[in-house]
Length: 304
Length: 68
Ligand SMILES: [Zn+2]
Image 1 (cartoon, each protein chain N blue to C red):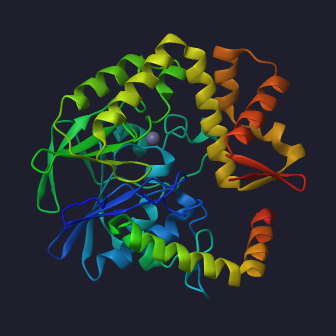
Image 2: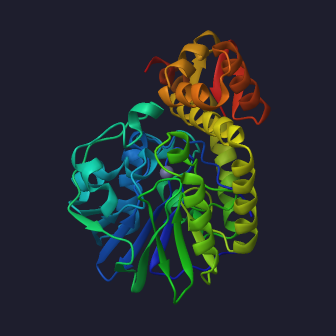
Image 3: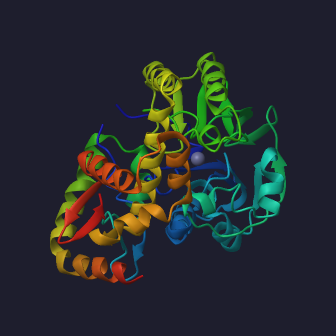
């Protein structure tokens, strides 16, 4: 089965460290949605340059401000002098480059500072690839996140609000900042009422098995709502795994200190799980080895 | 559907023109999402061949990666 997207759109499918980049062509102009992780920025610029084939990238739009979606913003601005447009709720956080609110400090992640040129709000419309896209508020994973929906082709650019298998970690709940579980529920309900033929998620391949994805997402969310420790544990694993993917490999003996250096993991453990430091480290290591997110190699732990 | 060979290294090697992680060219990464299984299979076969040819170099890159 090949997925038929309009010829005016191109999905640059990336991995877990970098979110997908979605390129839209309008004559000799182009717009990109999301820019990947900072350490991949050079490849992102090369991919975009190649795909542009002489067109001009004049706009870069973000779904939300996590490091794997905005990490290439500065490099793309530098390379193409494009206008950067971010969700309105993120104005202050980005303008002041608040590393806590951007989750860079808590998650031990990096980014490159940029300034946005314009804001986009929920219910605004933006034309990309000759299609009209509605910005939808999709709070949950990130309270200020936007998704982009085209009713004509019934395509949803979901960011991290909906994946083929789940959704991004519900950070606001774990950080005690907002009722992220309820917001996620409302967001999924809103999205599931839309006619959608195709989802282009922030991570993973575009997919058209939309009902099954909603079923999985609602089920996962209900597990988290019934058992917040499950969400906490899931989040710690995701964050350690992401950090290990960035690091690639680490001497086995350095792994405990590595986990302890991630404020978010320590904070979530203290708040929800209360495991001893040793139990936390051995639990994370065991579970990441079990799902092949890590492997052992000559005294090193290696991200798979 | 065949899944992407990306392993999150995502850095191009200037001399070979291949991604240091997944051994694909920029063109191959660019078109991946538009390809059907036959097209993807074709790339994966090339990737497997290149990986075999460049195995010693790959090990070098990996140990360089440690240093940073
Ligand atoms: Zn995110």
